[in-house]
Amino acid sequence: MSGHSKFANIKHKKEKNDAAKGKIFTIIGREIAVAVKEGGPDPNNNFKLATVIAKAKANNMPNETIDRGIKKAAGDVGNVNYKYVTYEGYGPGGIAIIVDALTDNTNRTAANVRSAFTKGQGSIGTPGCVSFMFDKKGQIIIDKEECEMEADDLMMIALDAGAEDFSEEDDSFEVLTDPDSFEQVRKSLEDAGIPMLSAEVTMIPQNYVELTDETAIKNLQRTLDMLDEDDDVQAVYHNWDE
Picture 1 (cartoon, rainbow, N blue to C red):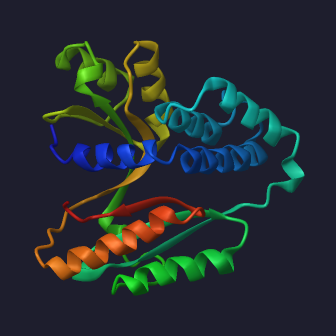
Picture 2 (cartoon, rainbow, N blue to C red):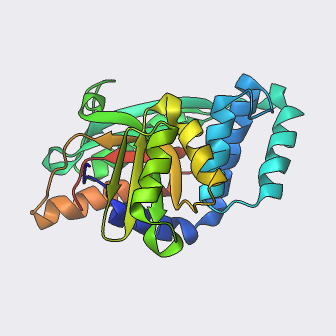
Picture 3 (cartoon, rainbow, N blue to C red):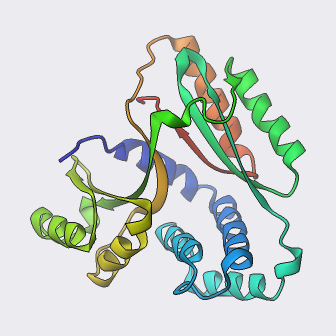
């Protein structure tokens, strides 16, 4: 099986998220509101909402908080004005970066994202300029320390549920799915009592790029930090091999 899991990156991101739960819950709350507006409050009939709920649970959002967000969104649909926007560009060293944002002011968000690229000595490009270097996949990460199941048994559950790939790393297991099969696979793992560190539809680089120049690394980190601190930014994908 493939061995391209970047658990260290995900674990690092999770630790940063743990220190900023307020932002993570705000981000997910916005996603819930948009999903409810687009497809209704029932996750059984709303794939996007089901996917957001899976993300919420993976980030340890309490069930009552999720339910409250759904009910609030259902009763306030007319006032949900957030819009999904995506930016693509290059950081130093030719690192490809994709930024997903959810905003009620695209002018503000575009200016902030452009500033993050510029201050890191990178540049925003045209739509599609780097996304062809990534594959959209459902990705589920399982921490070995939290999972009591044997790797072979876990793999069979995932593959039988429709997963495309299963890999084992030093600290984790990674399950990859087609985006359309993600919820089915995630639900099967949840029903089997398997704890998931991360469960989301994401963009996975086809290849990773190493940086050795210290200045380039510092500039790239500046861009990523600025994007991470922006409340409008939902997710940042890149092909930097940290």
